[in-house]
Length: 486
Image (cartoon, rainbow, N blue to C red; front, side):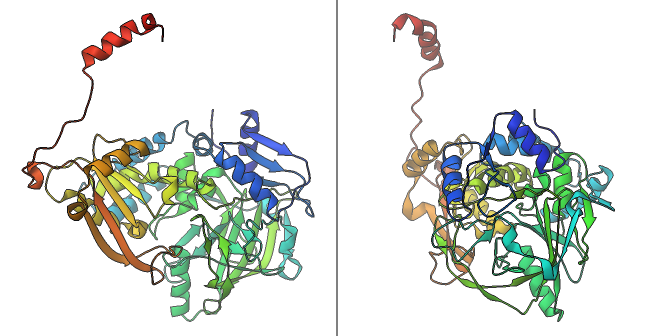
């Protein structure tokens, strides 16, 4: 049974006891070889792996720790991801004002969460600070950082919890942004245009700051690692979300050289800063789109100290042609945030962000339709919700369609679609990684109304019924099945 994991080690022990982790003592290379192994495993539903003999390194490396639906469910303390939907719906129901906007209601939940003791707790000493290495002695090459793909510009830290703070309000944010290792104590900081880390950088530049403090935690409890990937509004704390998932607040510790807090039970912490006005080329990188993202200018992270456990484990991930490990994180996010989306768009029954759509390329939505143009209203409403603004394709189907069944969706869409009438377009921001638009970060989006049409939609031609066998005949065949000898 899954439980509350205090740190990565408890989670590793759980996976091993469940038969869902392999220890590999064969020498392996962090240059391409581990990626090829992990890619084969994630695409076949294989186990998590702890590589104990990474060539040139003393530190073991953990990968594919969240690479199946059951595994990520266990990491978040549930047996099924739909339990997260139920928990979120229950919590949202505690806020009684039905007409509050989504962000206002979520902000109110922050106050409820304080009462519910989900808030993080700061401790004086922590496992992640057992060893202190000052900036001039830091050597990032001691970490078994992966070079994932042949066209990558170098090694990239791929599973960091990057902590920054709004320079005006002091509100912190935790995000997962890849970090290209440039040398012994500097990396790139690939926070994309629409991410909160990038917003903090722009605010720091507006304020004239020469240094914006940043901390990077590697490892910690699984709920906190996942929370770093969650698309929260800017004034909600990912540590608080992790506390909600775990049912109790996580422990934090203040960094040694910067005024930021990191998970006390992390494996490794990099402390440092970003100069808001400094940038340099970062990439190419084999990304979760299945394509290389090109070299572009991004901020530079300067490490002022490293702290770590005495015997740290390096957690990492790889991305590439989907599905890869990030998809399973995203599926947990989809399940948890469905009730929040339904607060704003109550006609939504379910959503699916399939692996092939890499989150922002395709969202399938089922709705209870009650008036003409409702599919268009839902699509435009979703384009107005936070990072859903980046969704390039939104497909709307009827309430009785199982959006998790891509075969059924493909049948319904291609059968129900009148292209001239049912396809509509919008323009606006798109994901930094989208390579299809002629201009970066801005482009077109498409909505598809694949619902059944009838008089409600101004249609005079009758809509055909689904072919479904009668219940009586189904029962007859069920009762005689064994006699058929088939």
